[in-house]
Image (tube, rainbow, N blue to C red):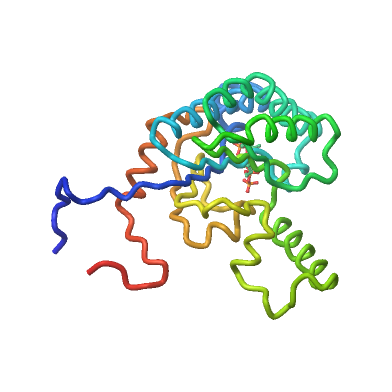
Length: 245
Ligand code: IPE
Ligand code: IPE
Ligand code: MG
């Protein structure tokens, strides 16, 4: 029998929520609008998500903005997605800085244009002293590619004699990933009803609770984040052990 939760029971709250922001194209198509307008609304949803994450006391929010596979989309759409990163940083960097948000961008930097690299570096440098909320944007990110890059750097360090192959552990490996220093996500949310990770945080999500929401990303709001958090609160996390009785 399961005892009813008493007010003394600690509610399981996440520190780190990661989100696959999916469904912009379908949201636009439902309105017979071009997909790029869906992405534009998606930026508004990102703003709401960052505000809600702060209000709900999260320490870390990680969002998937552009995958290494998204280069397969039409060039106009790819350009629009890059424009939105520019727009988001231009419009929100001051506010994020003032509100204590630390911004990090993870993913492959090679091959990005110099103006995008400048924007990334500016956002990271301006907010480096902040720590109220850690906002990590996965941009030109693929989990497999991140793991391969980490393996390459480990191999380079081994060849250079800085580490011995037999010293390599999961903890050491994690220190070579783009996410070094961040705790693993407690929850990975995917909006739009798709049930897959699409190459997002493959290493880090080993024990994340997966929450799939039917809402399309441009409709995401604080209530949707609260819904995911209350679903998380019901989950029994065991990490391979046997958990509570
Ligand atoms: C998510 O929305 C945004 C990115 C992948 C950049 P989509 O553009 O994938 O929207 P759907 O899945 O086509 O509806
Ligand atoms: C994942 O969504 C990438 C981002 C949200 C940035 P996709 O829409 O690209 O994923 P698939 O193609 O449906 O797996
Ligand atoms: Mg999609």
